[in-house]
Length: 97
Image (cartoon, rainbow, N blue to C red):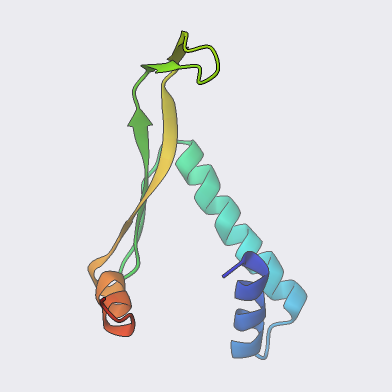
């Protein structure tokens, strides 16, 4: 599902909102979440999951062409951990092979 798909579904579900209002609301929520993560905060949405920042320590990598060692700096990356309700909902709707 893309952002525009989400906007369309929400606009259809809530008839009192225009497509433009729905698009603004989705953008505002996603921007607030991005800002909170950028400031190092954790986001928890009960029944859905939590977003946090995980630290990837610096490491030594290799250039695939030359084979020489390259120092890769520390990185901070967003991490999503699904909540129990989301895991169970996905598990019930997807067949296990």
